[in-house]
Length: 358
Image (tube, rainbow, N blue to C red; front, side, top):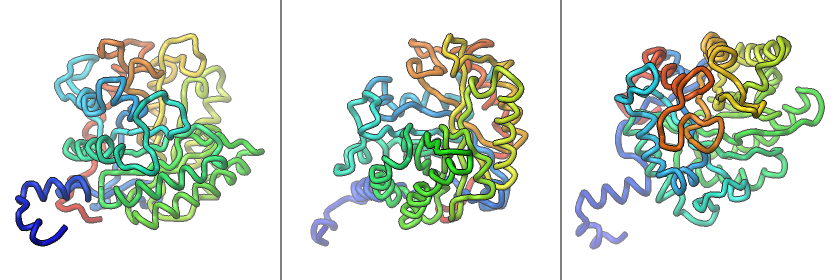
C-alpha cells in the first residue's frame, strides 16, 4: 500500500485490515508449553485443558446454525440445564474435514484459496480468544497417514504461519490415524514417520504452539510413544476412547488404562474425543456410571485434559437434541459434560498473561 493511500485510511479502518490479515492485536491467553509430562503456563503452573469438540467447522456453519452461535451455546455461563448453572470450558476443538474426507458440508478448506480462513476460521479463532478459550485446529482425517501425506503437508504449510502468533491456538496434526501394520510399536513407527514430517513443517513456521500428535488405531495405541516419541518441543499426545474400548470385560479397561498410564508417565496427553449415549451402536453405547464417570476419574488422576465429542444433535454421540436442548440423564452425555466442566472450572486453569509473547 502506498504512503499516499495509507495517510487517508483512518486508524480504525487500518486496525481492521491488520486484524484480518495478521491475526489478533491484543494480549492473548498465555502461551502453554511442555515440561516433562505436563502442560504448563509461563508461571510454571500445571494447566488442565477441558472442553468440547465441535463437529466439522464447515458443516456447523452451513447446517447447524453457525459456528459462533454454537460456541456461544457451549460457553453460556447462565445455562441452567443439567445440574450446573452454566458452561465453563477452557478449550474448544475445531475439526476441519479435508476436501476428500466427505463431511457433506459445502464449506471446505481448499489449498488454493483464502475464503475458508478469511471468512470463517480466522473470525472464529479471534472470537474464542475474546472468550478466553484455547482452540485446537484439528485436521480431521480418519485414515492411514501414508496416503494423506501430501494433503496434510499442504494444510499445515498453509495454517501454521497464519496462527504462529496466536498464543491460544494448538495444532492437532491428524485426527485419527488408522495405521495397523503389525505389533503396537510397528504401527506407531509407521505413524511417527509421517507425524515427524508434519511436526517439522509446523516448526518451520510456528515455533511455540503446542502440537498434538495422534497414534495408530484411531488414537488408541499410546504406550510405544513413551520410548519412541517424535522429535521436537511442545509435543502433546492424543487419545480417543469410546465405550466399545472400555466396556465388556476387565481386559479392555486394563488395556486402556495401561496405554494411558505408560504414555502419561513420560509425556502429556489430551483426550480430544470421548463420549457416550444409550444406543444400539456398540461403539458409543454407554452410561455415566459404566463409562463416563470412571473414564473421567482415570484421566483426571493421570492429569489428562479432555474434550467431549460432540457439540451436535446429528453427529454422534450427540450432546444436544434437535431443538438444541441438552441431553441429560444416566445414558446421555450432554448434562454430564456440562456438569463436569463446571465442577472442574477452578482446577488448574491457565493464568492470564500480560502480553502475547511466549
